Length: 122
Image 1 (cartoon, rainbow, N blue to C red):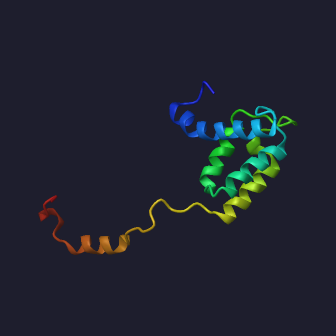
Image 2 (cartoon, rainbow, N blue to C red; image 1 turned 45 degrees about the vertical axis):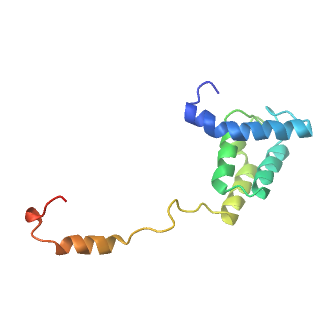
Image 3 (tube, rainbow, N blue to C red; image 1 turned 60 degrees about the vertical axis):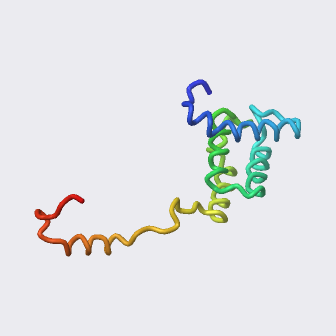
């Protein structure tokens, strides 16, 4: 974790804290859990209404410091990948901006302004 940048630490800390609380409540190891525990945690986040992006961040946070029983990383486990695909299908990421400009209208307007070399920047 010492190699993480400040932004990564800030982004991951929320989910690592949630993960540790989840593990403490269930009395399981937060460093070397079963894949079922990880799936339960990610499913819980989904049931709480978190977006795909947030759950994927949680998956990345866990994958950065957890090794599953068979030595695979959380993000590489086939069941975790399958769960994330399902969450993506159910809650696809939404665009940052709900509406965008029609560029063709702007370009048509700019094309109508001529001669270009006589236009002011204003």
